[in-house]
Image (cartoon, rainbow, N blue to C red):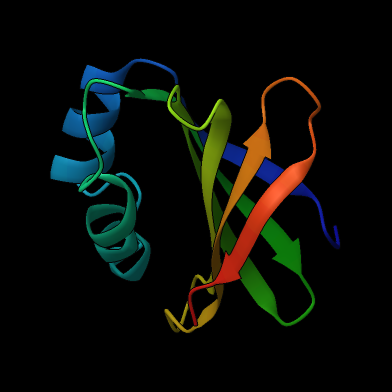
Length: 116
């Protein structure tokens, strides 16, 4: 069915995310993992906390799309930092990658940047 999403993984424990999602290729999205390492994991560890990683497979008429959203809470910025990505499952072609920050109090997007 068009645009039906199947949940592949939902990590909420940082150790499980690091072991299953990153070390054992559970994310299966090397480009997004590189952005995670470059943009988020270089930040101060004392104020940055893993919240969740959601990996879904969306069925479309032109093929399945893997979508990944990784969320960290940044206490210095009082925001959630979200790293997003989508790629074609069969060919591995990256369709989009972006990072944004959402204010924890207002829910407003305060920063958004395309990583492609």
